[in-house]
Length: 329
Image (cartoon, rainbow, N blue to C red):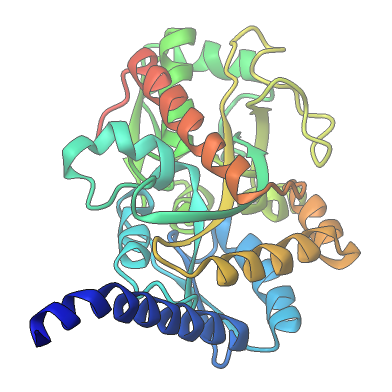
């Protein structure tokens, strides 16, 4: 008799338990955040991503009422920091600056060795910006245009080395496309981020570098390096005098991008709270003007739009990698 009654009441008990759990999660999300938030930047300090992360973090701190701390963890083309975020607790207190390399390119480049799945281990929040890649050279290199650069690279004794933020980064991919489409030879020297690569360029340890505009604009304006070309279909407003690769006869349409994601399992109310705060930040004059000056115009999306975008980018870069023949060094 007791067993029979227990079976009758079991569905009701389970329903009540589920309702209580849902209420607890809702209350937890409603209180969010109650402590500081770790914002992982999966690239080394001094590169393209870090200044973007810091601008966003400052505004998010104001909006959320808690400190958002940028934690830069470069290495393996962004894989190290991204894997750290993938393994974090899904409670909203670890968020990730999703970067094109670890979120799209490395899916194909690393294959089964990639320690996370961007689509399974992360919940999308919003896009942040899209930026072109730029080709920068040391002032000692006898080239003032991409055409002069290609001509020099074809000379027997050029022996050019180029630096990038790491194997599998957008800069690495653009360089390999340039090599293939222009018929030139260069040796890849991967660094743990754009910052270290820039240091090597300034000291002439490498004479060529591929990166996003934020990493090199200051040094270009100071005359310590020369920017010859940008990727993408049109010139970037922050470098209106610099032609695109395509304009110069070498079609390369590859764009870097940055987005915000959180570990899968993060309560939806927290995802939406972060989405609202991020979009408000990107729309604010303070953030938008700062990003525009970096050459990184703000561009936001819904979580659903970002999900579709990520799937499309993974497929696109798989095709580009096959064309470029880029490999892990």
